[in-house]
Length: 317
Length: 249
Image (cartoon, rainbow over all chains, first blue to last red):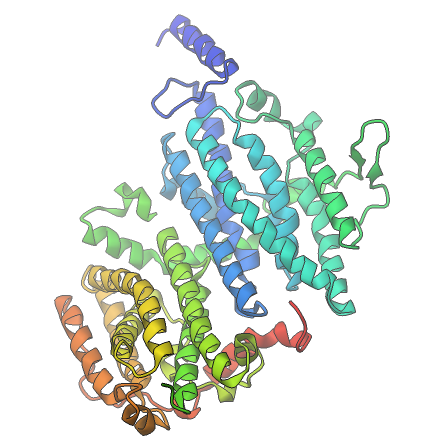
């Protein structure tokens, strides 16, 4: 394609996006747009898969039938979301197998938040409530994005995440209304998850390398700082309504703007954790790698039976 | 009509379902492929849901709630078969065990459709609908993994060799079985075992898997003669719940 053609295509592409149209798999798109989306959707898919682990750890210990059943269902949903997202990335030419191999090789990033430990049952509730609320704020924004398959996947995922939030919140309410020990357990979990959850929306706008371009092409429709503020405004009243504390003395509504002020998290910590050096990164990847290695014979057998090699069967990756 | 001894039957089935559901959920997040992660999480929820059906029927007769029975009862009071208590093993063992269990369930539940007990008849009809999907899935896996590659054949055969005698333990006679059979509540376990053997044989044969020749049913569970695997499992199951006994979670 000549440079002139490329320019015309790009102009038409950007005009379509400006009109609010969705880009679909067969459509012309700049390579950079495609790469950006594969990177983002891949990271998102990996986050769902790795995100099964911190809460999944508590399935054997969940107290009571209701908690046990809802927790299995929730973690199962994360696997389903991962499947849906790998599918969305495949519409852009990536394969599940390639993406999973990148994750296992430590080359792909995923959400910072799943690299923190879950030492108590309260973590299950607080992840469902805080982390999934932050995820829904972000994903509702992504559901407005320009790439059709991703936007539609986000709509469906948000629908299910709403149940996850309810599941988490409900578990925390039980603790907040429970014995002093249960209450302390809930507060301790809120304290530990507060800053990692604030970091989930990504680095602040002024140092985010991807935000500007992502906004122009409507890969994102809000900046990291906007998403973060929206989350804080939503969650702080909920935390306080349960009689729990936000672990930030600066957290108060700003009379002028109506938004909550809050202390910014340690951005160096975010950078370290996303780049593989968080408290549980090694443990998470090791668990995924073990599942992958232990399951190799199953994938090979299924591929052999369907007469395909594993290389050409992305669904089995 | 109910007989005074149906409680022991209900608990044996409820304990089987709960413990196997617990084991299946150990695959959540750790399965060979995403599709099986989803499938086994789903089967786990179904089995635990079936446990809830049987514990709820028990509660109506004995007054103790499902949570009390599952989360407060000492491990050595459980009457599940040993079969469901063994660690999840490799995926081949899990698939074979679940397939064996699905067929056993089907055989037992079908026999309940003619039971003198209304709760067994109606619950069986309900559970059979879900079990049909389990069997479709696990039998399909047995058929696809059984003879696909050298490794899959070796692993699946090892699964069959290990799980076969264990599965027969599902049909260990209940201590009060004679009364239940006389009352038209249930078919003797020995007959159910025969139906099970006949039902699994052609599936195994179709992929050249063979049951062990000399075997004794791995019984004991119905008489509360358990192995340490169950003690560990129940300790885990109840660990958070017991932090605040009788508390709300």
